[in-house]
Image (cartoon, rainbow, N blue to C red; front, side, top):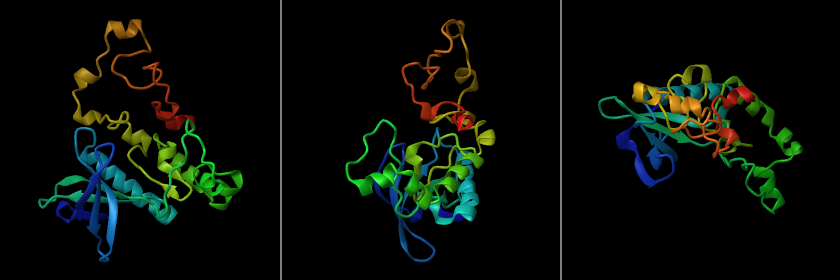
Length: 216
């Protein structure tokens, strides 16, 4: 497991999901750029440990085609977050709702043909997603070049503290977040406060259903 200290990080700019693009000097004296995700109410230190552990485990099998994760500590060795480095030349797959590029070569990278998938041994990446029980295997996290984002791997374990994207139940008020009122039952399965179908019928995002990995 590789460790960084927060004092080593140099901020480049912020990005989505409360993440920050940072630069740092690695142990081999090379400068690297990665995505720093700090610990907060939706990303606990326990989640960070699992993210790094799954990266180490999968890189032992798939090598550089899996994102490299670093644990970030402060000067008192408290976990502050993680830094993720994408596989070389990583370019995510195209979501089903997006239009394919007109250029053939560019299209083959983000919306590849069967021949291209076979030439890049893409089946081994799909097998890795299934074996690692990834409940967030959406196109944005998958590429011909490899796999990123390990927060929801090991679903039979992580489901207990990462119930859905943006929710870490160990850091929440259980009485509040697990409450179910008669009004919810009357309108079941449309439950107020939930974000995706079927609990929310207005957001039919099948990539992010609860227990989506079980449908692979």
